[in-house]
Amino acid sequence: MHLLLRTLLVLIRSRRRPKLDFFDSSSLPMRVLPTDIDIAMHLNNGMYFSLMDLGRFDLMVRSGFWDTMRRKDWNPVVGNETISFRKSLQLGQRYTIETKVIGFDDRATYIEQRMVADGEIYARAYIAARFVSKNGPVSNEEIFKAAGVLPPSDLELPEWVRQWRADGALPSTRRPAPHAWA
Image (tube, rainbow, N blue to C red; front, side, top):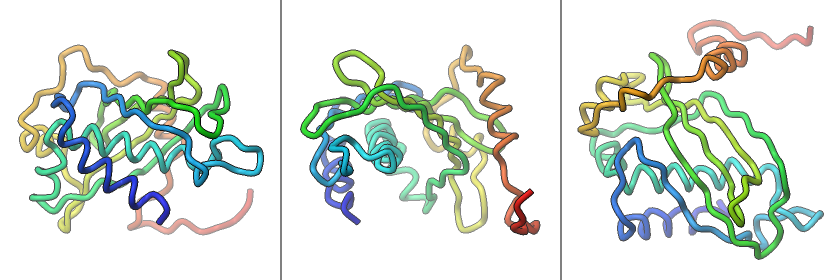
């Protein structure tokens, strides 16, 4: 709930920022606010993914895909995500959220996001996301057609990302996923 105002601001401000292609990288300037920190006075590890949502929103709005997605009643959902931390972002520190689509497969679009300050990566995350409609998942072909883009010919999903996705996947919602510690 505490990111609701920032989300609305990003959705409004991103419309005034330079346009991007769906496969361009987005750079969203930010600052660590008091609501972002933990008792150690640095950006709370749980906030990184929430703030990275804003970077993905910025890319979607600036590429025009946000309006297409809303018009078609599609919703973005995250299936997998992983993050690595290098340095702590401190209260009041300026940074950017860098966002780029790095590939896709038949189940997801893969995005790399970085928290960058003073030209250095502080944290890096990989996200497997997909778009869903009331009829189920939206295919890549539908996404590319609606966005009016073709993926760059040199865009190839790294093999380790495919393996990460396979290794971390849960069963589909149509199959049981019983809880039992091994």
